[in-house]
Amino acid sequence: MGTLIEEIFSRKSGRTVQAGEILLLDVDYIMSHDNTTPLAIKAFREIGKPILDKNRIVLHLDHAYPAPNVMAAENHRKIIDFVKEQDLPYLFQQGVCHQVMIEEGFVTPGSIIIGADSHSNTYGAMGAFGTGLGSTEIGVAWVTGKCWFKVPETIRVELHGRTQPGVYAKDVMIHIAGLLGMDGGTYRSVEFGGEYIDGLPMHERIIFPNMSTEIGAKCGLMAADHVTLDYLENETPARGRGPFEQIRPLNPRYERVLELDVSPLAPQVACHPDVDNVKPLEQVEGLEVQEVYIGTCTNARYEDLEIVANMLRGKKVNPYTRVIVTPASARIYKKALKSGLIEILMDAGCTVTGTGCGACIGRHGGILAPGERALTTMNRNFIGRMGSPLSEIYLASPATAAATALTGRITDPRGILENL
Amino acid sequence: MGKAWTFGENMNTDEIIPGRYNITIDPIELAKNVFCEVKPEYARDVKPGDVIVGGQNFGCGSSREHAPIAIKGSQAKCVIAASFARIFFRNAINIGLPILECPEAAADITEGDEIEVNLSTGEIFNRTNGHQYQSRPLPEFVLKIAEAGGIVSFLKEHDIQDLLV
Image 1 (cartoon, each protein chain N blue to C red):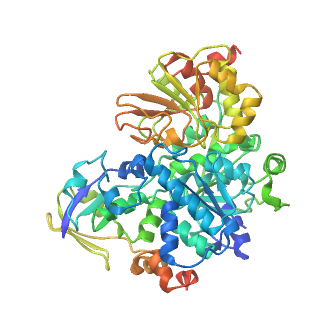
Image 2: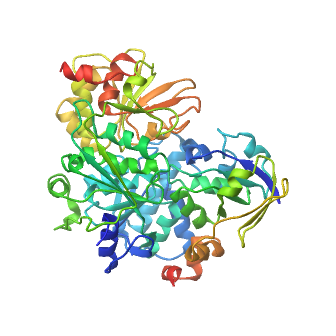
Image 3: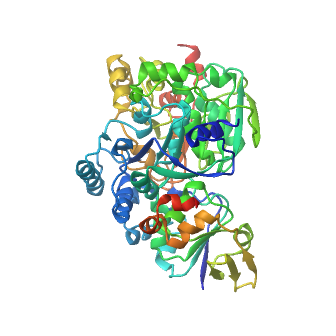
């Protein structure tokens, strides 16, 4: 009996647990990447005990990869040497960690995954508990297999209706971030549901838990259903651990319920410098941008690239705007190559880079100069995140990014979509 | 006793230490660039024992442990804030950076105030204006980690199960 997080934690605990309790739970997978693994190795060495189960450790090189400088290369070297030393089975170098975790079937309903990355909340899209932690706790979990959690209170976000053409999950989630605010979900589980969510495919669902991080949430969750199970069966190896239970909230007691009809929503933009500085696109339409970046764990999946390619097909992007596309994983990249999307994007004047997180954290692959403004499909627009602290980041959907790429100014995608 | 350095609401980890500096894990190196974009004079002028005072949601954003490490590396005594973002809270406790949640102190202290902090009682005294504040107590199991000086030190002496005993 309880909210989705209480139900998930109760199954893991073997007893009924309630919000407010402190639990020490076994974790199914422990994720970290090139930015956070070196500190986890340091903690591991200091603890001085052996790894409990190497099959639960998943490492990625994605944040500064391929290495943009010598120190990043040294980081990679350190991690690869550690993988060899400990004979770890899972090291990935072909995509943004969260996308790879889901594609490779590590994320399954009811599982508990901790990641040394704040967007580990993403795994909630599969009905899993995913949460971000620091590196030291990752090192601790390597040794103990466990992590402590306070069972959080839950904010239920109940979404009704269907979005209009040209309005996507990204627009809805940005709007929610504006309503709840940057600390509106702090220490909370934010549970997304309702007929709108039920009708969404997986690549759109992922946006909500992914960006629950931006409102401070411990996790963003969705109940697993036939869409989740179909995705697991058709798109992932699911690590042979089925059948999976469709855990749902059962007579839940929510701290707060936010009801929202998505039908009247127009495209939304989260404006510089905060994710909750949200405006309908029309209020910032025409604002000049020097860069459009389509990438990250939020919006660089195959379907996102498809939307962008469909809008750019046979056209040219603004010649004074840098338009950068970074597919979220090698699997997505390959599929987009085969189907011709990459060629369309390149013919339109986009720069298509290798996979990874680069530009989103200002490492490489699209850094901004002072005074520049970018419109991106990212999830976060902190000051200086993409480079100069005097640059500005605006967050929007891939369709808005494509429309903006064509004009060099923030542009409503609906005009272009209507004429396709 | 130390000097207060004040920061605003929603101080995020990118502002504490920008991503481009996270290629090192050395506390002293990280401390050279801590708060470089919001208060560049901090890294230059901070003295051991100074205190950082933030508003709501201090440390929001990425999971980078580099943020509390950079602050600890700068030899600040502690961070006082109206509230902490959840990952920063865990990270600070785990690496042994003292944090005190105290909305009253966060609202009242101004830059440069002389601040005394008693970490064992959570009492904060502002010598500049004579005001006294009491921070929120930490949960018992969190205190165990804090008193050990961080989770790594705790685990050298204990089993992780001991946290909840």
